[in-house]
Image (tube, rainbow, N blue to C red; front, top):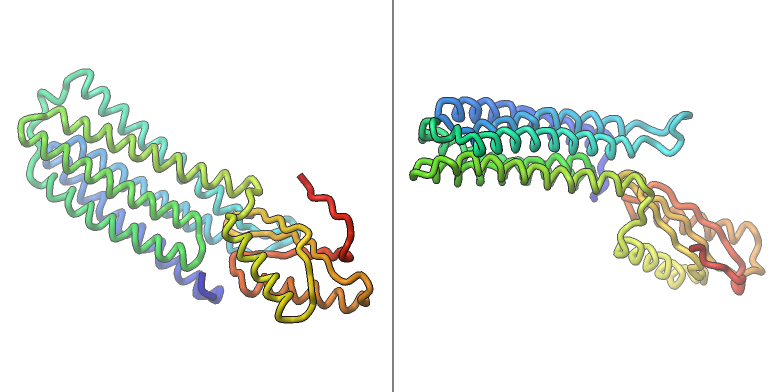
Length: 307
């Protein structure tokens, strides 16, 4: 993630939310009209999915803004985990949407109400194509902005857009099949859409929960941290040994607990300077790192690795 000022991050957050809300309001309205006018249960289901995106983006925006608040007396470690909470709420909305759509489609299939329904109109097909193109564009835009500001909740919102694009693909197939003389396929497409929504919801909630449970950072990140310390040791002449390096995720940020072995005969000031240099190096070069705690041991100290 590139270095961005707080004002720039706030601006990106506001723009991303505005695009998501405006796009989904317009698209859901068009799809709902097309679904009703075109007699397509799949398109009506798809419209409901898009409407849920409006609330999802609002939750993503609120969660992101709260997570940006600085640490205070009640929250000395900051508010980053509010993004995880927002992601869980977003996932819950998706689950409710998926279950509602799936239930209505199963009832239509069991009761065979699709037999008395009118053939889906061409406008429903047009709406499906427009939805696929629009939601795919919104997915890439939101994902790009989420990566710029390192926001898990906007990444989840991006995949919500992608799930809507995939559901529109299912709606397109179901509507097309219904127009070819297989009316049950419109309801089947709606059922497939509900399954896609539930799958996306599962992934969003799983990632959010993992980020709340002090899960360690990816091995690649820890390897980069070790390499940075080794490079410092070689270039500075202050030979240090990594006794322990433990990481934990805090929302989208990382805490690092580091124990280094140094020359036991150096002065306290010199040892402290090394700890400060390593601390500043990692927090400066790794924008995902929120804080580094450095503890120094004399070389040769019999360090016991914690389980």
